[in-house]
Length: 153
Image (cartoon, rainbow, N blue to C red):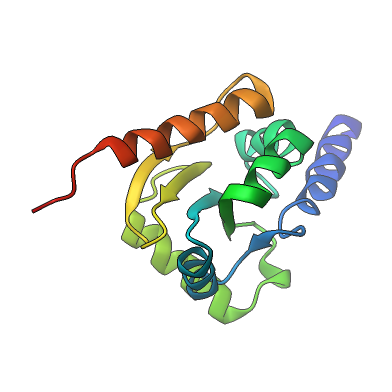
């Protein structure tokens, strides 16, 4: 029983990092900001208070300075969260996130999409081992590969 309580407390404490500075929850605002700043959007579909891999991705990557520094200069970050405890989410936010999950075909968590500044999907990923530096390189590769593709005619 004590192990369960420790795990539950750790999960609740880790939730605080989601919705932290720099992470938007409004998809329209994320798209607008990306277009204005000419930046790619990183959307993290997460179950922040129950999904072990989501919590791991947040702790090992998204909370680290190496990722934050890259994101601050290059990305618009958006969290589409599906917590078990929805008491901190508005009905509109829940509805938006459910709609986005359907539109993007999300089947599990975490699922991370990288979108162009125009809002087109350029890549899909999830948890990657190796820490924030490796994750940044992974995101750079997704963006770089998208830039190499010829435009549709």
